[in-house]
Image (cartoon, rainbow, N blue to C red; front, side, top):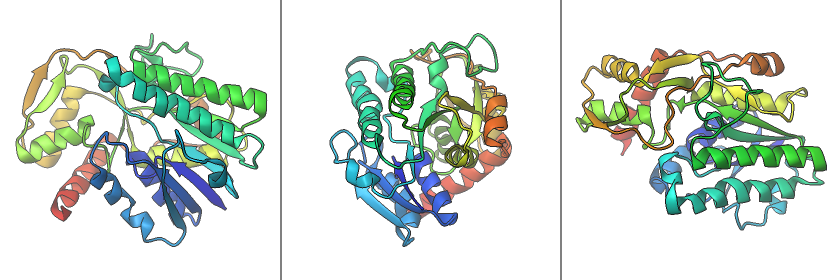
Length: 316
């Protein structure tokens, strides 16, 4: 069996690649090394996979690459490539989000038409909910993105639904909630907290720190993603993938201080446009349909991420 993973050098993508290879699955990975953060970090993410004979890598851009040859002999497509981040999606930055999150997704779905692909797994985001009316957002709740980034991720879901209904592309969308863990992007919250604790640089805290997030460890994200491809019952409708570790940002800062053993200095900033006060996902449908449940609690996950960051810094 051979699978295609887009965004293979990224945070979640590289963890997914390693898990698939460990399960005996051959993987074709593609990534364009977009300059959102250092290319060297992404190449380091790929090092374990490149040492595996079951892995093939293509340095390519979904916006203009010839995609049909990439799909030859592929059973499953895991589409994780995207332009991430809420804050940069405003203003002139929006164009790259349209290109990387909407146009690239549409091109890949179009290329899957008429192929033998058995499952197209699309990595969506809890950002599609915006500020949900309740603490545990359900997939049936009307989406209301609070940022341009969220708008583009929701557009990707709609494209998956359209190609599923009209052309039979077997797509399923997974709404990831606040992913953390080893290889987390250097711009993301837990990574920056741990770095601040280690080197004394302040952590930029937007708003009052009482924002609640549903933290989901990357290994749990990966297991749900693989389960979505393997399930014969996964619907075309979206599924929440949330870790159930809901915590205020200030509480996470305290946990990082406890784990690392050093204080996290705070640079208090105003609320950021597009930021929401709370995220939380109901996972009843995901548990029932995929037979999946999150296994990693927040403290354990932060211990593992802190150990990875310390080791990664030593290797550099």
